[in-house]
Length: 232
Image 1 (cartoon, rainbow, N blue to C red):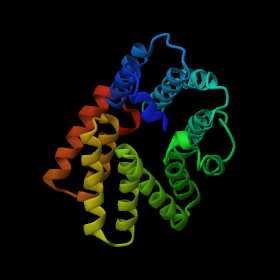
Image 2 (cartoon, helix red, strand yellow; image 1 turned 90 degrees about the vertical axis):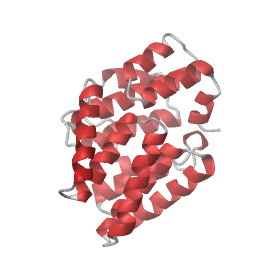
Image 3 (cartoon, rainbow, N blue to C red; image 1 turned 60 degrees about the vertical axis):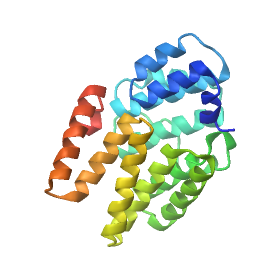
Image 4 (cartoon, helix red, strand yellow; image 1 turned 30 degrees about the vertical axis):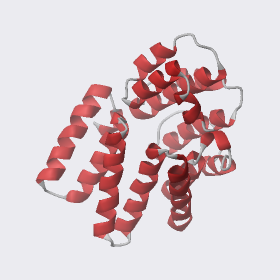
């Protein structure tokens, strides 16, 4: 069972998970309150880290929540996400860990994380090292894992990057179809920050069209509402 499946089996954690997906991270943390079960600590760390990755505020709450996980695979995943983000956006500060590509790769096969290490390894090796062929295999592995487990959020991430690679290869029809699919998948499961990111990506490929303008308007409104720093 993945952590996400375990959250959904608990009414309180399920509520916090859904509110988190809406980009209301503070409200999700309030629902968790002082709960101190292993699953509550895991969801608190995921929520705090995700808030930082979108808002780029103070990383201290995320680091504190991750430290409470006592070196679990999730702790490694979240710490590595912080380092990947630091390198991707060229943020100031000391490294959170070593090479994120290697760290993500070491987590592949951790059952509780599902196919997420496959995705993060693929996106980091593509964006940091430029290895698109290796990344393509990773996106496919993440896609297959997501379909098997029913993880639509992971599927939307894999689809979005497979679509981007199709566009880079000159297949505009397939690429745009996959970007639209990713956008609709995220909207269908109520992940507002991720939906805004998908809308921004799709709009960037549509040129000077009404659809692109409408999408950019939605991105702006969502980014302002949720404080999504790098989408403003």
